Picture 1 (cartoon, rainbow over the protein chains, first blue to last red):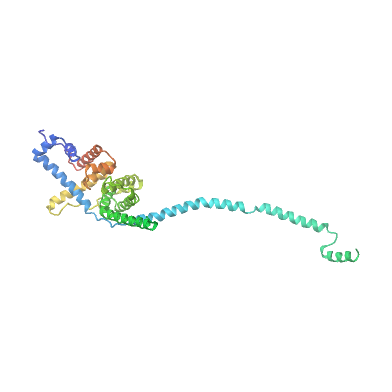
Picture 2 (picture 1 turned 135 degrees about the horizontal axis):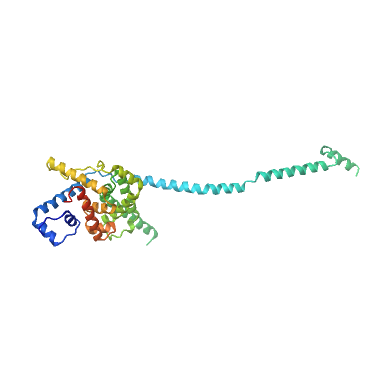
Length: 136
Length: 187
């Protein structure tokens, strides 16, 4: 191999794929060795720049915030499901206003009938009972 | 074993596991955070992802059999969480807004013994890598970061990503080619 290693060959080398030809060339070519070394230095600088970023302390604050949200979401869902069921049950238990009115009207009519069918007014009934006891 | 003794043994075992897990958290917290930060380019999102990662790990702690190293196992969880987070449209929106912004991660030279000119050049080149990684597809980015930011071996990356070793090499090669092209080193 007479010419220098291509950028693709250097990438293959860094990716862990290289044959004896590339190895031999790198051993004999200072320019290609320098290019590879220079790129490796930049990659080391990349790693170093990441290591210089401050690392936050160990914490589970986000996890603690997440758990109540789950609980709240579950409670809200349960409320959404339970509310219509409860409302329906309550509606079924409550007496229908129209039926109430009809029953009330019926009772009133019965009382009026009873009152009209009396032979004497109700206020006179005790007197009539006394008279009937004296004259059996 | 008496019931009381059994209960005590369970509690002692549980306390021991909790202590073990606590040690794991303190040992690997920074590494997981750095990977999340490099992947998401957002400190808040990275911190939240780190917490999620250890929460997932804690839930699965009793099932961890040590088939992979703890680091590989945690990185596998982190890689999956990063993939899920990257699918989030809102995060994609913020990432688009932040593309090219290197404020989230300080771009600096590896040591202070370089000449000012060399340090400036290196700083520019490192910034170029950050910009290039932001454009990489998710899998290529994960593989690139695990290799060059976390210095994991190809086999460890394969275990963390669920890819074959050959697939890792292919993704790594493509990522490196993109990075070099964007840095103007594709000649």
